[in-house]
Length: 405
Image (cartoon, rainbow, N blue to C red; front, side, top):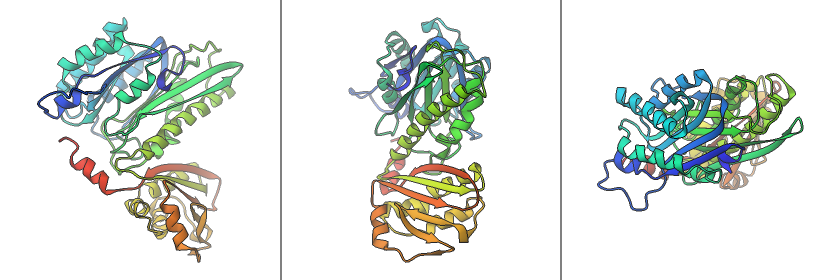
């Protein structure tokens, strides 16, 4: 399924040994896994993208922002194991070469190819290994290789992340599929996260770029694992028109239906990222209701999900709801303590300005579940949002202490 669920999209993969070259290993492991993939559309796509807000951007991010200006993308080339960030002029030459090599193989122009990289920062791409890998991936394109592509972009992820939906829009069955990667260096406003959503819907030019930010705000920008924002974050949406529907216009009912379907896929992928956070043992869903605005609700939910004190309490099963109230207070969202109603796993722990007499053992049991739901009802308006995070464990420290070695 994944990115090839939508008609007209194919994927191919290759095992290049990129991480072995990047980390200075003496040899490429015999069981080297795929670490490069190419996604190809049979037709040019209307494409929208949002990228890292970090002032330090990888070469791939800069190149993609330039290529998107012409809005005629037809392929993606993605590598894992090396971020191609902080690599100076050589990094830009390598990113451009990745696009050109892919374009030559697929009979496209280089600006029809977007490139993404993820992995270790500050190391040059092993282009001698990547060149044949791109050729292999392009030669092996198939609509059955979507799941393989999702595996090829993994770094510290423990599982591939895919999602898909099918929806009827004006009498036409439209497909939406996607894949993402991300496990650490995850924080709102994107993170070390790559996400790609494809659809076979026909849309008017510019629709994808017009809705991509709002979809990111309701999905990937609500994920937090560790408070770090990466140099490589990329979220791309591609619509190739293979479904054959009348082009969907901005502001129409059909555009709203398509945006809802894409948001569903994006949120499924976002939750999968939080669930697979580095060293994570628990998924934390934070819901904020009745805020002054959706923006306030997003801020409040993110503050709770990203609080290190909340995350460690969840990990240890400590029924310390005061940390949640504290995070809501510094989130920047409007808050009236006497109107706040807070539940953990359905158990009311705070209302009318004070904590209530709750069975703390029951709250502890709620925190010990693999999935924890925290709901804060602010009582101030109609705004609502969700954020997704995970616990912070000793294993997270181990993974990142040994990341390049």
